[in-house]
Image 1: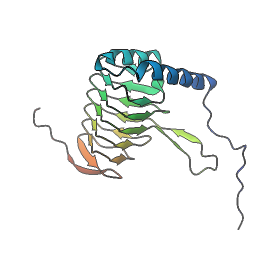
Image 2 (image 1 turned 120 degrees about the vertical axis):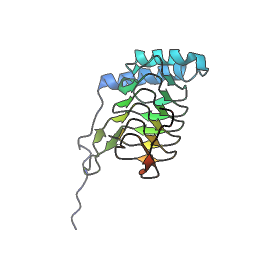
Image 3 (image 1 turned 30 degrees about the horizontal axis):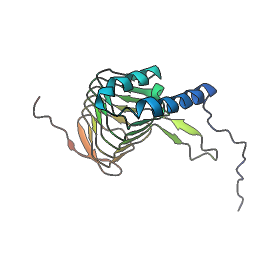
Length: 186
């Protein structure tokens, strides 16, 4: 049996110096001016800080102080949307959250992965999109390249690896269709 040796010179994705410097600045600013300002009335201050670092976030949205955001410049959040407590937004790739959407506590949004078919495990960036009126419930995982359709409910602790059609309710690991979402008050 012949084994292929892994060379330490294999090419890997490298972030630019500008990206690395911005990340360092963001970590410092986030630690001092974002996470330490917990009261709700600092909501607009947190949005301002995100905007300074390149995020496209509506002034009418809510981002909790305990949210972990990897790269604000890869984040877009629409009006009246909420990113809840302890959400981990690992957005090396772009994350777009539409209007009136909710990302509940402890959800994990992962917009990157690695190419396991290569020995170098090259980084792959794939955007996550959560459309208007969707709800990603507590502890759910959204994988790279996933689009959550308009009005979708992703059940608590679900793991989503494929796109979810509009006005569906999904749950489980991997997330499976449960039923169509019907709104009574429309």
